[in-house]
Length: 335
Image 1 (spheres, helix red, strand yellow):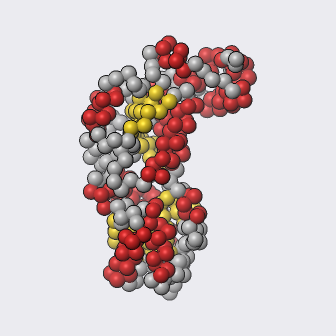
Image 2 (image 1 turned 90 degrees about the horizontal axis):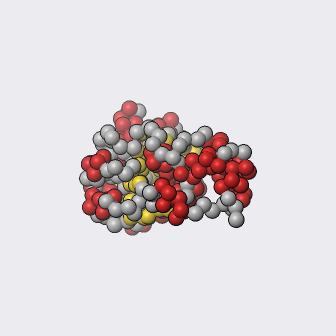
Image 3 (image 1 turned 45 degrees about the horizontal axis):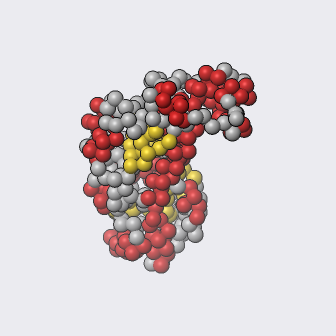
């Protein structure tokens, strides 16, 4: 059986350093952590989770709170969840997934027991009713998303406001003067979901700065709704030449609808999106997009939580800058 001393010898560190890498109790350098993880993988080391939990009075379980509300695109949410789970296992932690829309009551039920050591909270609203409880909990937490008032909280996410701005600025550089945002389903805006609101803010601010004519159109996540939005846009904005899409399920149906209505992409209409790279690349006309870094956000959220569990100070806010990849769906506006 592989022992912790074997891992230490393989990584060229002390057994206590291996322990710190697994528990997050003390900070270690990124280079050392990677050496320890490599040694664990090479040797097939499996720490005894029960013994470690007993010794530390911890459960070695993290709660991942993802209320599966209407309008949520589950495949993208699950990308975040997979990243959290796989990263937590590197720290010898399991993940308890909470998907019910129970709000503060559900959080309190979990936090008042010894089930979990810490929490990661998703689907954050601008005025989230869970915030007072999260601020008062003794258990550490990290939010994937930014409420309007993030004081006293640890938050991480893509900078969605900058992502909306980046899409508009790209279209403006190409000479487009009339643009539209096809956004999330209406109920997402009604709940004031933070990431969706930030995209609208960034889109509108960038359009105003560049003197563009702009409009925002929530869209149900269905091909028929995409067709209706495309028809409405061409009816109400006949000079439209640039579209930003922030709604993964309708990206391809929307492009199909525009083409069926006689517009070539990108000859007549340039399309950008905020979505996972694999989706942008898979569309018949590959789409210029800002990547949704679900794997990085999930991994970094767990690392922040491990540091907090170890008593290490962490930044209150971590905003990942948008990364845009230009593909075949955008081109200079026809004169």
